[in-house]
Image 1: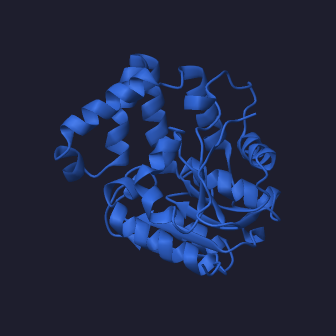
Image 2 (image 1 turned 90 degrees about the vertical axis):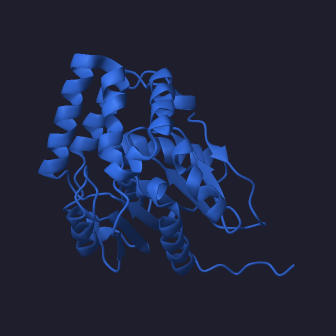
Length: 267
């Protein structure tokens, strides 16, 4: 069973919010969001299967439906029957899959720099990154990754931090086979025919300067999901929740509050 990190509930019956990262898979990706959310929600984070605390070989036919099923089973085993999901990129796709496969369980979605089906631009970015992986191994993959995640000025001001992050990422690399299986599942996912069936409240957050996933993908997503709301940040890159956490956290907190009205206990 996949291991989850379940924070204490701020009060009995507080809404559960599951945080799901992108292709990197690490639950620590959401560090800058925890303080903004933990007083209102019971937070659940996790390392995707095949990464971090849930390292281990993945099956040959690994798919997005499998990823969503693994998370749902782990949540059920932990006694969590209903939850909102905040997902970044691949994590957003897992959220879409769960909202379709388990609509009774998903109370709301917040989709960050996600998509309905992979844009030709994003596919090209991943093709280049795969070539780097095959030619230069884990180090080449990891060192190229920030170029797709962060704005140039943000990176230029934080070179020591990026070097430390690179060293950590290389030492905890998920392995070439697992990465390629997870990437294949990501590339094959296509919600263009099913998104109109998503019934839960949905917030979509994008960054106008995302180099990996064009902001237009989020606009298409918003058009496809009935009643969904879109907020586009003017700056922040693909990892806008890291680079401009203050702006992002305000958008997310306000969005969750609107989607998950809470009758909080009076103390």
